[in-house]
Image 1 (cartoon, helix red, strand yellow):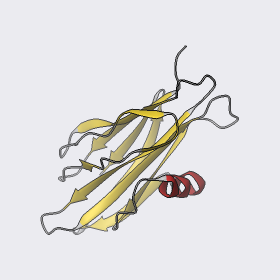
Image 2 (cartoon, rainbow, N blue to C red):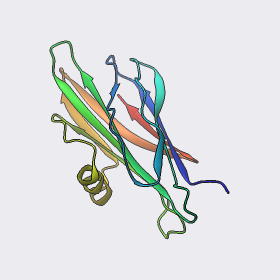
Image 3 (cartoon, rainbow, N blue to C red):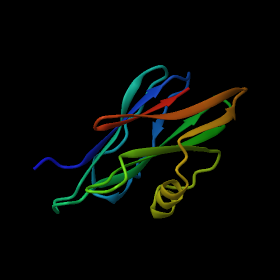
Image 4 (cartoon, one colour):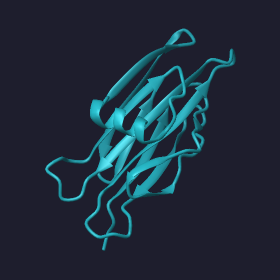
Length: 145
């Protein structure tokens, strides 16, 4: 039986390295892999969450990155995706930026899940950072520029 799964793909279009948060949170399913470091102007893996061993279960999880400037300023990025099983709702994803680390846990998951931010922008080091979601079959892709 094929499991419901989400593959996060990250396209870093900035001059900053994206450092993965070592913490992941899955509301449904389990993380098979966490996010990896994504160098400037490179693409990388943002994590892999898949349904549990129980039948008839979807998958949903949240991962995070941070980027830090030469001046020490840090921005935190959160990516959430949901692949429900037998639901009236389609697969979907959401994103956010923050200037403070709000953690990756049930509260962060709930905040994103119920607010559904699809795009986010933030001023950082004299430029505008943007993050957006592009949904493709079996993957949720985040562009960060």
